[in-house]
Length: 388
Figure 1: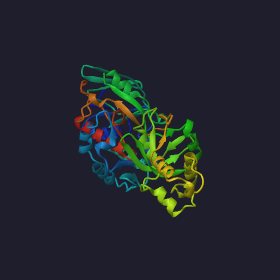
Figure 2 (figure 1 turned 135 degrees about the vertical axis):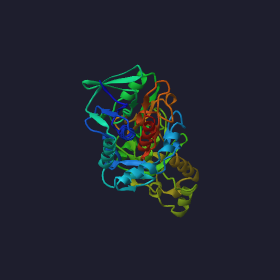
Figure 3 (figure 1 turned 60 degrees about the vertical axis):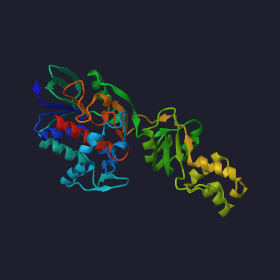
Figure 4 (figure 1 turned 30 degrees about the vertical axis):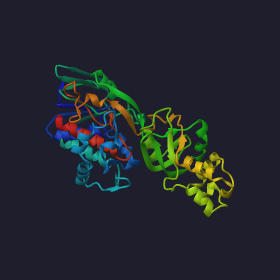
């Protein structure tokens, strides 16, 4: 039986980074994945250019049952640390918007960098190898990988969540965690388009129309683009709010976030013969749909101020009732996962199972859209690797 210092399950962002760092610390590491290639999710991220971090990273931009859990790892491995690594490899990058950093070239550069880091650490990588069994006895973990069994005193779960199953994503991490007595917070799709039905069906006819809005749900609010699709709502503002939304709840959209109070009555005074649709600073089809739904035809001069005030209020908090989301198939990440209550925030180690660790997306820490989830992958991997 081949023996290692650590076995890492999952060759995604967190697993690759952890393996490379641990290997360079002198640990003998085996990195295993059932996929035939490493970093598949990295390759499709950021439109193929990998939004590898966000300079605005802060703990309050992550969702978790324990809001403070991510603080330690994020503080000890920052965006600047990963940027330094990227630059050491000569990978050119740029800031797109809102602190989001992308490769100038291709996401393949990030995967190649991580594989090179693994090579520097002498990491053994076994791809296309299904994990048939995971056991623990006498202080060692035994993993059946393909046709062989390997063992190590440390096992790292880094197989991610079930989002984007076409890339091979599964709930394996949760099954493995439960096997060792770790709790799992309910996994659900996050950063995912929402589906409209019923009274909101009208808006699906606007497929392809986009506008800058503020999306609200509870205390969460995001100002970015919203996009109408043939199934409902998408775009950055909607993807962001979807992480907070729960089935059965509503979301609210401010279609005119820059409009001052009383703007519609002022428009009536300035352009009495204009219609509501012509007054709205929105794409034409969207403006017409909103005006139709508000049932305010004709010129502004003929509309009572009270109705204009009510329309203003409606446009600033337009309520949608999504019937669901497009599910894990279209979700960029997963909310929920291995409970942070069962892990050390310092090392990512399981509190009651010596030698067991969990990192990356499989943990109940989920970032906003825009590179935050990659930064969590790097930071949690670094915290774990330092403890191996």
